[in-house]
Amino acid sequence: MATTIITKEQWAESEKFITKLKEVNIRFAQQNGRMRLAHTETYGCQQNVNDTERIRGMLDKAGFGFTDDAKEADLVIYNTCAVRENAEQRVFGRLGILKHIKETKPELIVAVCGCMVQQEHICEKIKKVHDHVDLIFGTHALYRMPELLYRTITENETVVDITNSDGAICEDVPILRDRAEKAWVSIMYGCNNFCTYCIVPYVRGRERSRKPEDILNEIKGLVANGTTEISLLGQNVNSYGKDLDTEIDFADLLRMVNDIEGVERIRFMTSHPKDLSDKLIYTIRDCDKICKQLHLPLQSGSDKILKDMNRHYTKEQYLAIVEKLKKEIPGITLTTDIIVGFPTETTPDFRETLEVLKSVRYDNIFSFIYSRREGTPAAKLDFALSDEEIHKNFEEMLEVQNQICLEKNLEYKDKIETVLVEDVSDTEPTILTGRNDGGKLVTFAGDASLKGKYVKVKITKPKQWSLEGELQ
Ligand code: SAH
Ligand code: SF4
Ligand code: F3S
Image 1 (cartoon, rainbow, N blue to C red):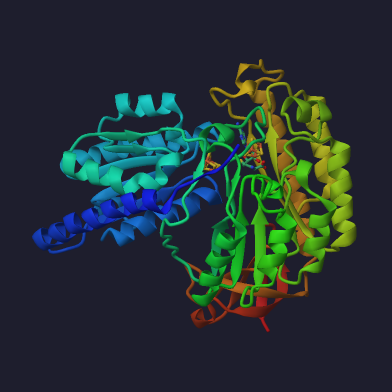
Image 2: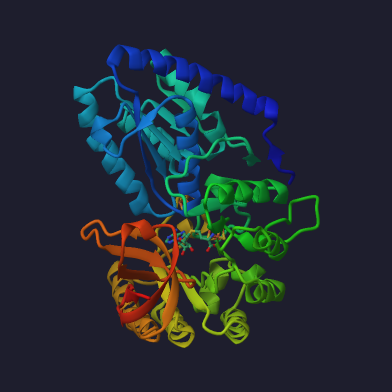
């Protein structure tokens, strides 16, 4: 399916509303002696984080200031996630709290956007149960936010836009990032895979790739502003370029990014095992700036469950990829996603997943208990196991993996790692944190002025979740 490109003219329409919002906000500032303040909260994946950066980019241009404290804000925007029920419940909980705040502060504007509200039943529920929400817009309406927000502020009525355009790309939305040294760059949007448990393809639309020149220009702009680490984002980066007119695949794009002067580190996520080519493995191996790290979601180690999940690979195929990765790129850091308690999963199926964890020995796993998503094929299936059995399996898996995490980290003892310094510890201002090439968290004593720099750290005390070390 062809990707709809939001034209310059369509964006120019949106931009007019940025100007109008700015006028309204200037009047607000004159009357109140301060800027109108926005507070944003993001749930879900890095793509959502990147979307919030666009929302903040538009708000910034429209003359909003920002606050970390929702109680101080004039506008609260929740950018939501629909991937599991608990992410949705957290947002409903938050909306409940905002209701009280709004009782004492009726001029507060409450907006909910993103994946969760792209589902019609959720949108209806918000309208019914949380009538203090003023603005609801889905993932496809992001670039129209200025107009929607302008209408919310000036017309004083609830504005809703969850229309589903089969996916579009708008290149002109400004992005406001809050850290300089590293940046998320979306290279594609949407997903075509329809794993049977997953809501993402329904709320994000079909796969569509940004043009390489747009991606490269964005990265060059970031580098000019001091960014050195680039993380390329997509639900399935390995199918990048399939929908473009030009002959290009993800490995080609990686090489182009590797050639940009000033880029020091390249990471990417997520790689779907079914589309991981040998060419990509060799590209990771051969390009000096690509971190030797891969997040490769397994989901399950049982062929039956993988089939029921519609994942399009077998355990054997997955393990063959891992073997090749380890052979070609010795020391590569591997992480994965696992779902425990998929409806048809039995305990023997679960045991097969455990066996894969023990044989691959991931550096870390992100594990989730299956959450039923309305409208997905798996939602109709009956459960083979009870809740209690699923939780027991989940706990067992964590125990197995925790031990592996510690053992993998112990291998770093006395090694000298290159670390990009990212943060100063909240509790101890002399402690810095950063990440090594493999993406592991490293903590060490140092001066805050090192933030954004690459330093050498000798690992003295590997722990389960991080590596403690000394600046060299
Ligand atoms: N596109 C990525 C992941 C997107 S969602 C991929 O294919 O790997 C991130 C993770 O959430 C998934 O890898 C999966 O492990 C988990 N997930 C997705 N839907 C879920 C559900 N209904 N219940 C529990 N976990 C789920
Ligand atoms: Fe969801 Fe599967 Fe697409 Fe990942 S690849 S977003 S798990 S449907
Ligand atoms: Fe969640 Fe949407 Fe990302 S459902 S995981 S925020 S794509």
